[in-house]
Length: 143
Image 1: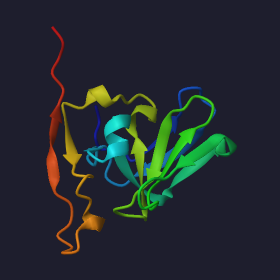
Image 2: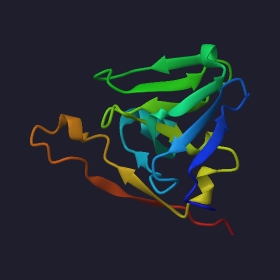
Image 3: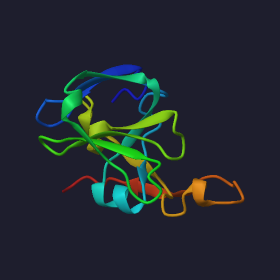
């Protein structure tokens, strides 16, 4: 797997939503989050600047979800239900993009995925200390 991918196309499961994205630092930014929503969703996300993400088809199919403070906006296909991307609360100038939606990429391609502590979100920390890394998820090959 080439972690230095610069630009790549992506789509939801049904193909109704298609997009092109310029990744901020390739697949090197891959991470999971422990907040209640991400924990249930289970996706691995990579980073892209807002200007680097372009919907090619199906913008009308995108539905959004916000919770808690309403700062982060999570986008998913209203037809197949797949989460495609979200505008981050920690950095509103970035999208987190679901790696499983990227052409030829699977979340299982990653040996390790850092986990961000979304339960103790940096925006909730009055000291401004910033995010702490909650750990690393390791994928162990099946026998």
